[in-house]
Length: 316
Image 1 (cartoon, rainbow, N blue to C red):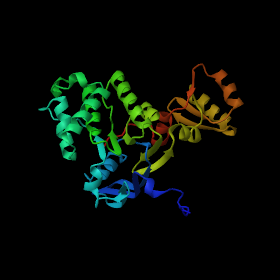
Image 2: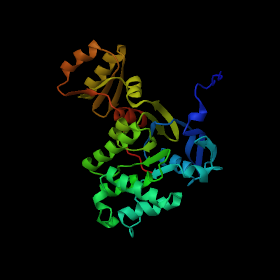
Image 3: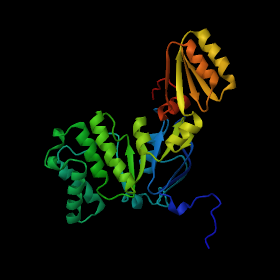
Image 4: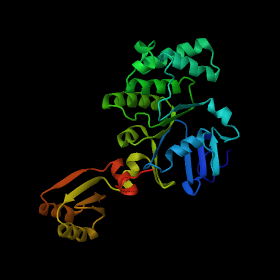
């Protein structure tokens, strides 16, 4: 009989395991002891403001940046020692478009596949399947300059899947796209996730993360500040709904005093008060009578993100 693992997890099953990851650039600490565990079939999303350490983490996993400290294993193999081996089983959709402009849509896939030593016949079949899957088959002979932004992002996804990766890394996969193009990519990624594709995702689109991710880690200043299933951590850390009150400073202060006996969180932002409701609060229902403008809605992942990381714009 197999003895139980004291940590409560079988490390052999992990696609990606990161322990105490640290990265320093000069005097600036970008990562300060980050831990990540990604299992087969999961879609793990890394969320955080600009400069939080998301892209640095991905670049370390891909061997583009050397960690200052920490342990990294991909498919159970430590990096950077086995980096060359594990790269054959990783697919990457970069944030920046790096398609070859001198090649056609189909040629971009065929040339990229040559790096993985896949047989030519197999590659052609796979390329045509992927182009059909991402609604690009009728553009297979087009040069890259003739493609729209959405078509280019879909081609990047197709290219990332040409080697049938065990881990698909998505760095802002729908950045800059219109809603229709984004929706198509979401549908394709959902299909892949349901079929068992393991994904590591970074995104600033909270709707994208809520839709695709099975697990979320919110990073701020290089550290994990929240993690769990998207809907679960919103409910546990914020509540089920949000009420937004607008009014004078005196009225908002009075409301804050009134709510001290309730199971709610309150956050003042200028002339507004955000109230995150976990359980029923009769005082809150009564208070709405004194405010002509009250917005009531379900709590979302974006609300949690703003509550934990702040509402001010950050520059990096």
